[in-house]
Length: 73
View 1 (tube, one colour):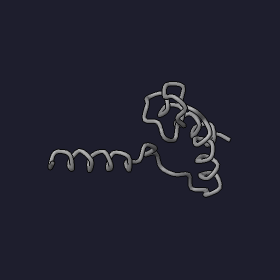
View 2 (view 1 turned 120 degrees about the vertical axis):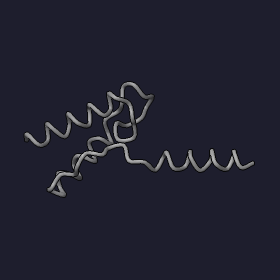
View 3 (view 1 turned 180 degrees about the vertical axis):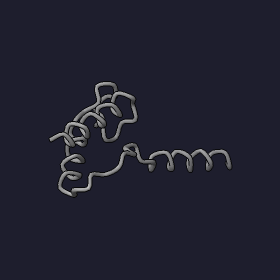
């Protein structure tokens, strides 16, 4: 029983970890635009999961690339 409770706690804590750990944009409008974009773009590795929710390496690269492109204008 204790093992089952421990596993449930671990599973619940894993979903609360942040995937996008990069610093936020200084401009709140740009940050909101970035959040909207990564919430729309789908990860090609994960089935029907956004790159915002995916922890695949490709999703991390795509988030980084979107951030870079937005910073460059």
